[in-house]
Length: 39
Image (cartoon, rainbow, N blue to C red; front, side):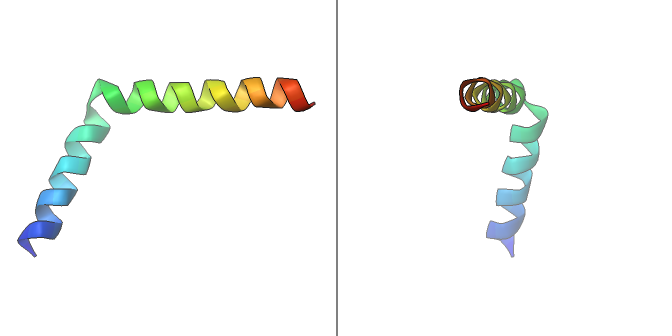
């Protein structure tokens, strides 16, 4: 139970951090570029 709670809090801090949004924006950019190449 403790391990699950610690992982949840770590994930929560990651989501609230800037790193999550940077990674999300990067993934979105890759998808857009790939779509432009294949379409």
